[in-house]
Length: 403
Image (cartoon, rainbow, N blue to C red; front, side, top):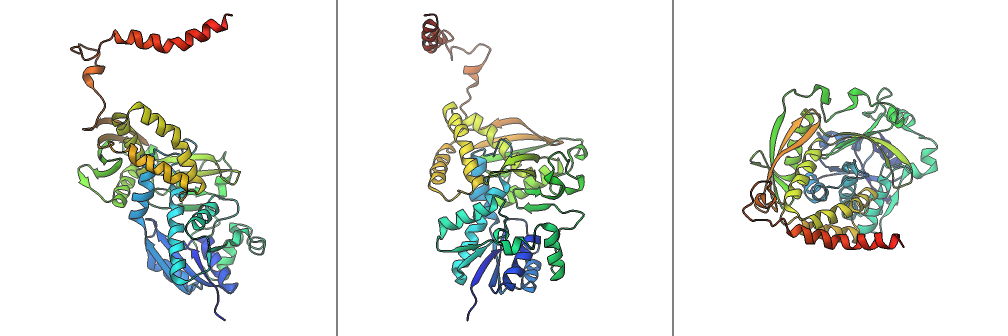
């Protein structure tokens, strides 16, 4: 009898390497699937590892440009941060990874999808909600939620022992047991010593950024050009979306930009501690926000700031493919029509400072706002009636309070 096929979201790391072998031992034909979001230096090496671990087939999809253009840049347009700090690096990656996994499953005729997310994390929700939205017929196998798996492989120590037993080389070691996940937008770290929120992250853990204390003593000035909310040129040179983010990562990393250490609220109900490096994304967010301040009216800015936490929460919780998200993205497109222009930024020891912005669609009128002679551009006596009208409800309330 033919074995059931399962498409495994495979990274070549500890968890998915162990899961691939475990699924094979359980009698499945495992198709290893890798999505390259900028984190894969050697796809051939990962393929070789997957096949040696028992995979019957291997698919690698280069999704870098799609990831940055259709996911990262959308978040930048919304200035989206989760709980005020997290730039959604992993959250934005999961729906496009899951989308590719569904496409591979349909191509090879697989009935099942599998992933290495644990029953304690957000990624399980993101993968499975995306799959449900795109192909509800597919079923999911999640070893970390199955007692026969997690009662034997209880954590990273047991996973490393299993890998060693079956000859699977892994990056994690007993000395550096934290888990990392990277793509073009960021790299994240969790587990190990990081599970104690009172402990400082080890200095040698960081991979994308220089320690701000050791960053260059001389500031660097860059210029970003945006068209309809999208960064298209850096210092006068045009880049594709993926190449733009890659270059900004290099520049930002050199100056120690984009480190975040935070405790966040997972969708599954618990608090978790994560450490993130997002150098290029941090630069893009800062530049985009300053350009919006110049080109958007106050009402639109307020509307976006009101809706932004909802957008960020939808991304974080795994609802990229949902009717609510479709509505928000339609509004987002409308809001960016005039967000075109240039922003100059100074980068220095972990800081991003806007030092100039310009746009042909600017709403800023220097004559109207000037504290000098405005040649009649603004009649200051108009403010008298404006204030009186806005004071009416306040006076009515004060009068009522005295009764």
